[in-house]
Length: 149
Image 1 (cartoon, helix red, strand yellow):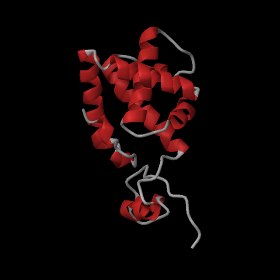
Image 2 (tube, helix red, strand yellow; image 1 turned 30 degrees about the vertical axis):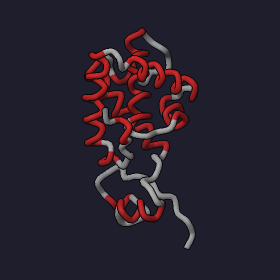
Image 3 (cartoon, helix red, strand yellow; image 1 turned 90 degrees about the vertical axis):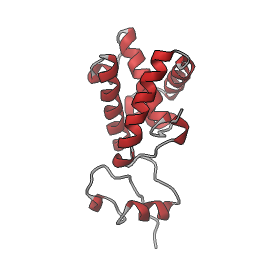
């Protein structure tokens, strides 16, 4: 049997998957599959919207191609961090989804991780991680156990 590419579920309709169930997909690959680039972009929009509701930065400004104001850049960095830590997207996948360089994503993740000593930032990240823990698997993304703090 020829190996087939298996993408995570984007919708509740399992007929969109080349295999019948998520369990079958996981068994076929030995693990939950990595997100398809289109799904990485969808995940970026979802996380940007969640971050925007907490920071007051509109989703379009988080996803904008320019740096923007400092608050917009910080919201974008939080978005990158959550995509990496909570949804297990690689730096490269995040960079492609947000039209950034991989080193920019790496820098953002380092900044936000170092900033977790700030109680307010850590509380917000924990809340957002909790939301993503619930909805990430529904969209077909892996939940990173390292995000539990």
